[in-house]
Image (cartoon, rainbow, N blue to C red; front, side):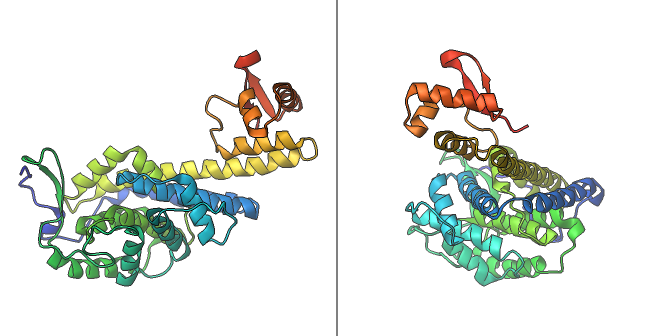
Length: 368
């Protein structure tokens, strides 16, 4: 088995006293707080129904992509229906799998109780949530207890490469007691990114559960970010981490060998800022949606309104390649001639713009 002779961070004498160069994080910390303020201000301008929809969308995306990082593919619509149900909102009644219900419950619990102290019982409950429907594990809702080393490996069975090895199971209870005490210390808002990044790395370095450590570790990071600003962040961090999955694994791997976490925190901070930017785009899009329908209220027929609502459902980027006449026909079940008239009127009134001619025509929302 191939393994570097360099020790893991938990084997170092300085463990777990992580340190970093604050000067290299200062601008990232300041930008995180600035964008958090912009988020809160912009979110407040949304109608209640849009706030609820955004909350369900962001949390379902986080559930979907945090699971995808671990190789588990879930259904976005089922997740969103489950999350809306947990918030007591109208939903389509879609049946979700145990795994979808479990990760949905985790996201909603972190959102609702972000300000609560982290406890062993909370972590055990989260583990039961993310392991919902799993019957192949010995330890669910408790720390791992197996005697075999907890390793992350790749490569051929006869010559595996060890990317990480966690502390032995017998050390986990004491390591987690110390981690929980560290996490529950008084918060310093000006180091919110650093605390969240260290919390994620610290938890992953212990790897206290048989499975589900990545999903719970990312939930802990989001809890820490919310605590730093005093409100739920509504930032789908896992969406960005999934996008840069290999850089994420590489950064975690490098950080697992050192107590100096400056490089890891710079990477983590950049990921958080990108996630904030994406979330802000979604909020601003919903603000534009509200203004759009206020502007054209009373001018749209039932078909046009249904088509526009369907386009808005696609999000910031809209239909890939634009809306076609055939899209309109499928959505409204109208004739080709009616679809052509409806779309031409939308262009005439300025609600949409058209690119191309005849069958190649494509239509885009005009939100300027």
